[in-house]
Amino acid sequence: MPDAVFALPDSIDLAIIGAGPHALTLVTHLLQKKKSMRRRFLVFDPSGTWMRQWNHQFAALEIPHLRSPAVHQPDPAPHALRTFAERRPNELFAPYDLPGTNLFQDFCQEVIRRWQLQTCVYPAQVVQIQPFSDRRSRFCLELSDGQTMVARRVVIANGGGRPHFPGWVDQISQNYPEDRLLHSHQVDLRGSHLRGERVLIIGGGLTSGHLAVGAIQRGAEVMLMSRRSVYEKLFDADPGWLGPNTSKISGQNPIGLLAGR
Ligand SMILES: Cc1cc2nc3c(=O)[nH]c(=O)nc-3n(C[C@H](O)[C@H](O)[C@H](O)COP(=O)(O)OP(=O)(O)OC[C@H]3O[C@@H](n4cnc5c(N)ncnc54)[C@H](O)[C@@H]3O)c2cc1C
Image (tube, rainbow, N blue to C red; front, side, top):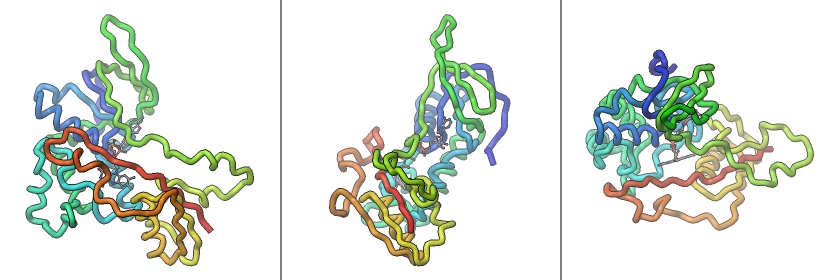
């Protein structure tokens, strides 16, 4: 359910497309620097709520904890997540206090509540952006519900966009059952019946690892295929990018492809 349904203004200063962690981080930092922005921005997401895509991917892949340390979080106070976790120390995982999935989700809800952001996500997809010609240079956003609105600035925080399939997938000439060749984004372990199945997972990153563990736990025989040998890595990004003074957040989305039976 959307967090709120409200009338769309004709124009807005800032339109943010997507209500994931990047948008949330942007909004809290913006409000910290300029309180007057409060009524001057709107966030658009088909779900009408914050963090839907993030929460879905962690649930669908049954990921117990984040791969990024506790300083990677959406509040401007660098230690806000650590402070939030003081009464839940068992939900910070070694070796670098990786937040548990539930802890991080609860923390994000607390950030949304504390910054009073519950009602700023409008439930629609932005389907088109065009230059809007008047005296000022602005944009006209067309929404999936047929409405339009004008924005002075637009931030696109729509996540990874479309799943990226390797080129050879298009070259498969024979028809095959579509549910047997999936991108990791399309997999939901929770509804998968895999006992006795043979599953090939292509990709050597963490997503492939999560999928392999989930499939094995369900009784599947799993083969992992990757271009390089699988290795252990403490961080997604070079540690120089990590820490409270870091203004950039980095993440990798390894390609995982699941081919069944
Ligand atoms: C399995 C997995 C595990 C991960 N683990 C971690 C981790 O531990 N730590 C970490 O930092 N990162 C992790 N990542 C990466 C992380 O998910 C992404 O970096 C992060 O979600 C990107 O945030 P975002 O706000 O840009 O996008 P998203 O969280 O993907 O949100 C984008 C939102 O935009 C909306 N949207 C898209 N198009 C439109 C449109 N046209 N109009 C309106 N709304 C639109 C979508 O509905 C979605 O809700 C992981 C990724 C995966 C796949």
